[in-house]
Image (cartoon, rainbow, N blue to C red):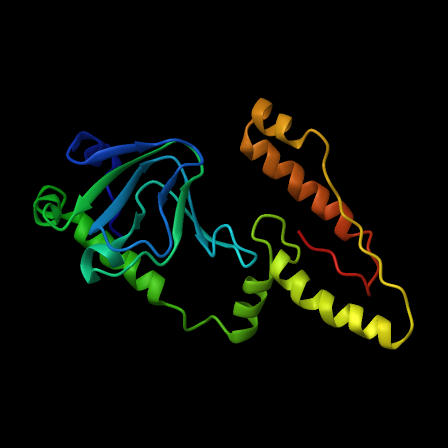
Length: 211
């Protein structure tokens, strides 16, 4: 399997850009700007429905990964939001520079085709797996807000019919922002995952726990 030579890519100073941790690189729904990115350093996260109740983290991009090709080759609006999970550097290729880029980096064409094939290989994903992904918070593995809001309506209606009382408990982690500011967002993510795990193992089978 051919791999991108990242050291060679980093020497190619044409079109390199840097993004700070937490910075939005591209936004879902944006009109095409005919740009594709090749990640050189850092980690970037891919979200569908970012900032909405149905937000789902669908992928984590590593150095050597491509993204944004739909805009470049098909002139389509952005289909996902990409956010820098760490400080990120990337080569930015547009429709004017793509030919020159592939001439300078010929192995990139092969790796790019590999990437596209992997993204199109959805034959092993069944409907139940897709439903689970849509209903699950990507970070903690518990139900997400959208599933909670949809399910709560039917649970409250059922309790009302049976003349039972419904209770909602809201958890708020004290000084959570200080954890992120002091130890970084990875530490904050670890706190959320551990908290969710402890809480989820202590709810009753008929309870609904979500982030």
